[in-house]
Image 1: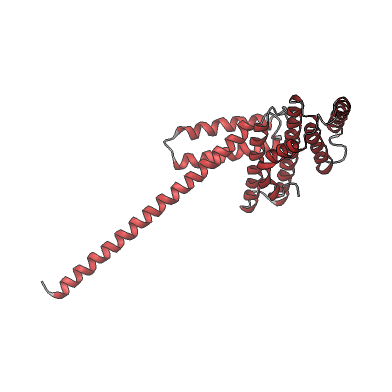
Image 2: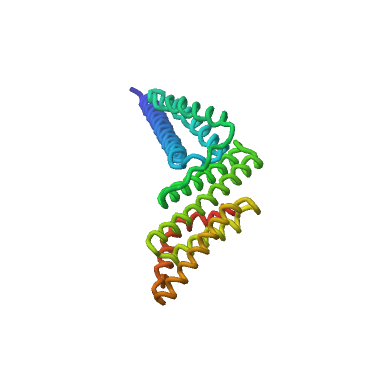
Length: 260
């Protein structure tokens, strides 16, 4: 065999090896890309499902609930294309399509259910913050125009305001049950100030009146206790400790300036 033939064979083998390496790398990259897309879609699906399950009736407005349900349908359709053998995705499409139809056919938004505990408040705040980021993402991808995104953001801000106030009121009620009356006044006062600062004029007058009446009653009770036993209601250090604990989970949200 001539040297030219040998060189030709070697070059051909090298070319085959290069092609094989290129094809293998391309296949691996596609697998990794598919895995990333699947992971992102499944994480998004879990977040949306958590929003719907963690938020009691009326906490998500009708428009926000429809946005989440519509997004779940879109995500489930993408997952069904990537994993056609997983029939759970098609079941999700049907489930959330039915939910969306019910939401759109509602004559009015459902009455807002009261929140029952601080842990629930925390979960709902997390969901609303995630939804807030998702609206920005949709706007950046031009799935929503500026006016639509602003309308959703305004509704999220309104719901987040009410949930935060609910959190203060729950903490206040818990303090009353534990006979920590100054601490209770502190939390009710925070709820009042937040409604006055962020709420539109006249929107929360009934709720503000209830809060003010509660504060006034507690202050009368505190004065009576102090007159009967001076110093018995000194809760300053515990008030600071409770407030710091309550604010731990809200620092990140404040940085986002959702209320701005």
